Image 1 (cartoon, rainbow, N blue to C red):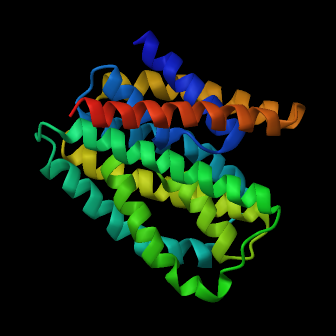
Image 2 (image 1 turned 135 degrees about the horizontal axis):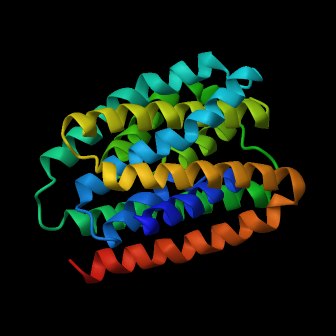
Length: 251
Protein backbone atom coordinates (compact mmCIF):
# COMPACT_ATOMS: atom_id res chain seq x y z
CA UNK A 1 0.00 0.00 0.00
CA UNK A 2 2.86 2.39 0.84
CA UNK A 3 4.42 2.01 -2.62
CA UNK A 4 1.13 3.07 -4.23
CA UNK A 5 0.85 6.17 -2.01
CA UNK A 6 4.47 7.08 -2.79
CA UNK A 7 3.91 6.52 -6.52
CA UNK A 8 0.78 8.69 -6.43
CA UNK A 9 2.71 11.45 -4.67
CA UNK A 10 5.55 11.64 -7.23
CA UNK A 11 3.26 11.33 -10.26
CA UNK A 12 0.98 14.06 -8.92
CA UNK A 13 4.04 16.21 -8.13
CA UNK A 14 4.94 16.00 -11.83
CA UNK A 15 1.35 16.95 -12.71
CA UNK A 16 1.47 19.98 -10.42
CA UNK A 17 4.77 21.13 -11.94
CA UNK A 18 4.11 20.43 -15.62
CA UNK A 19 0.45 19.44 -16.09
CA UNK A 20 1.54 16.10 -17.59
CA UNK A 21 1.90 12.69 -16.02
CA UNK A 22 -1.40 11.33 -14.70
CA UNK A 23 -2.37 8.89 -17.44
CA UNK A 24 1.03 8.70 -19.10
CA UNK A 25 2.96 7.42 -16.09
CA UNK A 26 0.36 5.73 -13.90
CA UNK A 27 -0.81 2.80 -16.05
CA UNK A 28 2.71 1.57 -17.01
CA UNK A 29 3.83 1.85 -13.39
CA UNK A 30 0.84 -0.16 -12.14
CA UNK A 31 1.46 -2.84 -14.78
CA UNK A 32 5.10 -3.06 -13.70
CA UNK A 33 3.91 -3.37 -10.08
CA UNK A 34 1.90 -6.45 -11.04
CA UNK A 35 -1.63 -5.32 -11.97
CA UNK A 36 -3.23 -6.80 -15.06
CA UNK A 37 -3.55 -4.23 -17.90
CA UNK A 38 -7.31 -3.62 -17.65
CA UNK A 39 -7.20 -2.96 -13.89
CA UNK A 40 -4.07 -0.82 -14.30
CA UNK A 41 -5.78 1.41 -16.89
CA UNK A 42 -9.03 1.59 -14.90
CA UNK A 43 -7.19 2.52 -11.69
CA UNK A 44 -5.01 5.03 -13.59
CA UNK A 45 -8.08 6.75 -15.04
CA UNK A 46 -9.68 6.99 -11.59
CA UNK A 47 -6.48 8.42 -10.12
CA UNK A 48 -6.22 10.92 -12.98
CA UNK A 49 -9.80 12.12 -12.47
CA UNK A 50 -9.30 12.40 -8.71
CA UNK A 51 -6.14 14.54 -8.85
CA UNK A 52 -7.39 16.73 -11.73
CA UNK A 53 -10.70 17.64 -10.07
CA UNK A 54 -9.24 20.24 -7.63
CA UNK A 55 -7.34 21.85 -10.54
CA UNK A 56 -10.57 21.98 -12.57
CA UNK A 57 -12.42 23.69 -9.71
CA UNK A 58 -9.61 26.24 -9.41
CA UNK A 59 -9.68 27.08 -13.13
CA UNK A 60 -13.49 27.18 -13.21
CA UNK A 61 -13.62 29.65 -10.32
CA UNK A 62 -11.09 31.91 -12.07
CA UNK A 63 -13.04 31.63 -15.35
CA UNK A 64 -10.13 30.00 -17.16
CA UNK A 65 -12.33 27.59 -19.13
CA UNK A 66 -13.67 28.32 -22.60
CA UNK A 67 -16.72 26.06 -22.57
CA UNK A 68 -17.41 26.40 -26.29
CA UNK A 69 -13.99 24.94 -27.10
CA UNK A 70 -14.37 22.31 -24.35
CA UNK A 71 -17.71 21.06 -25.73
CA UNK A 72 -16.22 20.97 -29.25
CA UNK A 73 -13.40 18.74 -27.98
CA UNK A 74 -15.74 16.54 -25.94
CA UNK A 75 -18.02 15.98 -28.95
CA UNK A 76 -15.22 13.83 -30.35
CA UNK A 77 -13.49 12.82 -27.13
CA UNK A 78 -16.51 11.25 -25.41
CA UNK A 79 -17.33 8.64 -28.09
CA UNK A 80 -13.59 7.96 -28.40
CA UNK A 81 -13.24 7.22 -24.67
CA UNK A 82 -16.25 4.91 -24.71
CA UNK A 83 -14.94 2.98 -27.71
CA UNK A 84 -11.41 2.76 -26.25
CA UNK A 85 -12.71 1.52 -22.90
CA UNK A 86 -14.88 -1.08 -24.63
CA UNK A 87 -11.94 -2.30 -26.72
CA UNK A 88 -9.75 -2.67 -23.62
CA UNK A 89 -12.44 -4.65 -21.78
CA UNK A 90 -13.00 -6.81 -24.87
CA UNK A 91 -9.28 -7.54 -25.25
CA UNK A 92 -8.44 -7.68 -21.54
CA UNK A 93 -7.61 -11.40 -21.57
CA UNK A 94 -5.40 -11.29 -24.66
CA UNK A 95 -1.87 -12.49 -23.88
CA UNK A 96 0.01 -9.68 -25.66
CA UNK A 97 -2.13 -6.79 -24.38
CA UNK A 98 0.50 -5.62 -21.87
CA UNK A 99 3.10 -5.22 -24.64
CA UNK A 100 0.65 -3.35 -26.89
CA UNK A 101 -0.10 -0.91 -24.06
CA UNK A 102 3.61 -0.37 -23.42
CA UNK A 103 4.20 0.40 -27.11
CA UNK A 104 1.24 2.78 -27.48
CA UNK A 105 2.04 4.71 -24.29
CA UNK A 106 5.74 4.84 -25.18
CA UNK A 107 5.07 6.29 -28.64
CA UNK A 108 2.49 8.71 -27.17
CA UNK A 109 5.14 10.08 -24.80
CA UNK A 110 7.61 10.48 -27.70
CA UNK A 111 4.97 12.26 -29.81
CA UNK A 112 4.01 14.66 -27.03
CA UNK A 113 7.69 15.46 -26.29
CA UNK A 114 8.40 16.05 -30.01
CA UNK A 115 5.38 18.33 -30.47
CA UNK A 116 6.17 20.33 -27.34
CA UNK A 117 9.82 20.63 -28.37
CA UNK A 118 8.72 21.84 -31.81
CA UNK A 119 6.55 24.51 -30.20
CA UNK A 120 9.36 25.57 -27.85
CA UNK A 121 11.98 25.82 -30.63
CA UNK A 122 9.64 27.84 -32.85
CA UNK A 123 9.00 30.15 -29.91
CA UNK A 124 5.71 30.89 -31.66
CA UNK A 125 2.36 29.16 -31.80
CA UNK A 126 1.55 27.31 -35.02
CA UNK A 127 -1.68 28.84 -36.31
CA UNK A 128 -4.08 26.15 -37.52
CA UNK A 129 -7.22 27.96 -36.36
CA UNK A 130 -8.74 27.82 -39.86
CA UNK A 131 -8.89 24.05 -39.34
CA UNK A 132 -10.63 24.34 -35.97
CA UNK A 133 -13.46 22.16 -37.31
CA UNK A 134 -11.03 19.21 -37.14
CA UNK A 135 -10.82 19.43 -33.33
CA UNK A 136 -13.60 16.85 -32.68
CA UNK A 137 -11.96 14.37 -35.08
CA UNK A 138 -8.55 14.76 -33.45
CA UNK A 139 -10.10 14.53 -29.97
CA UNK A 140 -11.88 11.31 -30.96
CA UNK A 141 -8.51 9.60 -31.39
CA UNK A 142 -7.19 11.12 -28.16
CA UNK A 143 -10.30 9.85 -26.36
CA UNK A 144 -9.84 6.43 -27.98
CA UNK A 145 -6.32 6.27 -26.60
CA UNK A 146 -7.37 7.52 -23.16
CA UNK A 147 -10.02 4.81 -22.87
CA UNK A 148 -7.59 2.12 -24.05
CA UNK A 149 -4.37 3.17 -22.28
CA UNK A 150 -5.31 6.11 -19.94
CA UNK A 151 -2.61 8.23 -21.65
CA UNK A 152 -2.73 11.23 -23.96
CA UNK A 153 -5.49 13.58 -22.79
CA UNK A 154 -3.27 16.12 -21.01
CA UNK A 155 -0.21 16.21 -23.27
CA UNK A 156 -1.87 15.84 -26.68
CA UNK A 157 -4.92 17.90 -25.73
CA UNK A 158 -2.69 20.83 -24.82
CA UNK A 159 -0.89 20.62 -28.17
CA UNK A 160 -4.22 20.75 -30.02
CA UNK A 161 -5.29 23.81 -28.04
CA UNK A 162 -2.03 25.62 -28.81
CA UNK A 163 -2.30 24.85 -32.53
CA UNK A 164 -6.03 25.02 -33.29
CA UNK A 165 -7.17 27.88 -31.03
CA UNK A 166 -6.07 31.37 -30.08
CA UNK A 167 -6.80 30.86 -26.38
CA UNK A 168 -4.38 32.55 -24.02
CA UNK A 169 -2.15 30.06 -22.13
CA UNK A 170 -4.10 30.13 -18.84
CA UNK A 171 -7.40 29.40 -20.60
CA UNK A 172 -5.78 26.71 -22.76
CA UNK A 173 -4.55 24.99 -19.57
CA UNK A 174 -8.02 25.29 -18.04
CA UNK A 175 -9.71 23.72 -21.07
CA UNK A 176 -7.05 20.99 -21.24
CA UNK A 177 -7.56 20.07 -17.57
CA UNK A 178 -11.35 20.06 -18.01
CA UNK A 179 -11.06 17.86 -21.12
CA UNK A 180 -8.70 15.45 -19.35
CA UNK A 181 -10.97 15.33 -16.31
CA UNK A 182 -14.05 14.57 -18.41
CA UNK A 183 -12.29 11.82 -20.38
CA UNK A 184 -10.75 10.27 -17.26
CA UNK A 185 -14.04 10.39 -15.34
CA UNK A 186 -16.02 8.79 -18.15
CA UNK A 187 -13.38 6.13 -18.73
CA UNK A 188 -13.08 5.33 -15.03
CA UNK A 189 -16.88 5.01 -14.76
CA UNK A 190 -16.90 2.53 -17.65
CA UNK A 191 -14.08 0.52 -16.06
CA UNK A 192 -15.76 0.69 -12.64
CA UNK A 193 -18.90 -0.87 -14.10
CA UNK A 194 -16.66 -3.57 -15.58
CA UNK A 195 -14.91 -4.16 -12.22
CA UNK A 196 -11.60 -2.94 -13.66
CA UNK A 197 -10.70 -0.62 -10.77
CA UNK A 198 -8.69 -1.86 -7.79
CA UNK A 199 -9.66 0.16 -4.65
CA UNK A 200 -6.57 -1.10 -2.80
CA UNK A 201 -4.48 0.69 -5.42
CA UNK A 202 -6.65 3.69 -6.23
CA UNK A 203 -7.29 4.90 -2.65
CA UNK A 204 -3.67 5.10 -1.38
CA UNK A 205 -2.51 6.57 -4.71
CA UNK A 206 -5.18 9.26 -4.49
CA UNK A 207 -4.23 10.35 -0.97
CA UNK A 208 -0.56 10.50 -1.98
CA UNK A 209 -1.60 12.32 -5.14
CA UNK A 210 -3.44 15.10 -3.32
CA UNK A 211 -0.28 15.95 -1.39
CA UNK A 212 1.82 15.77 -4.56
CA UNK A 213 -0.47 18.08 -6.56
CA UNK A 214 -0.56 20.61 -3.73
CA UNK A 215 3.25 20.61 -3.40
CA UNK A 216 3.80 20.81 -7.17
CA UNK A 217 1.35 23.71 -7.55
CA UNK A 218 2.96 25.49 -4.58
CA UNK A 219 6.48 25.06 -5.98
CA UNK A 220 5.54 26.56 -9.36
CA UNK A 221 4.83 29.83 -7.53
CA UNK A 222 8.14 29.75 -5.66
CA UNK A 223 10.67 28.52 -8.22
CA UNK A 224 11.27 28.71 -11.96
CA UNK A 225 9.43 25.64 -13.31
CA UNK A 226 11.22 25.58 -16.70
CA UNK A 227 14.34 23.63 -15.60
CA UNK A 228 12.12 21.12 -13.80
CA UNK A 229 9.95 20.73 -16.90
CA UNK A 230 13.02 20.01 -19.00
CA UNK A 231 14.19 17.48 -16.40
CA UNK A 232 10.79 15.77 -16.32
CA UNK A 233 10.70 15.76 -20.16
CA UNK A 234 14.09 14.02 -20.15
CA UNK A 235 12.85 11.47 -17.59
CA UNK A 236 9.71 10.92 -19.69
CA UNK A 237 11.95 10.29 -22.70
CA UNK A 238 13.79 7.57 -20.74
CA UNK A 239 10.42 6.11 -19.66
CA UNK A 240 9.22 6.07 -23.29
CA UNK A 241 12.35 4.29 -24.52
CA UNK A 242 12.04 1.73 -21.72
CA UNK A 243 8.35 1.08 -22.47
CA UNK A 244 8.96 0.68 -26.20
CA UNK A 245 11.86 -1.69 -25.51
CA UNK A 246 9.69 -3.77 -23.17
CA UNK A 247 6.86 -3.84 -25.72
CA UNK A 248 9.15 -5.04 -28.51
CA UNK A 249 11.39 -7.46 -26.62
CA UNK A 250 8.79 -9.06 -24.34
CA UNK A 251 6.20 -9.91 -26.95
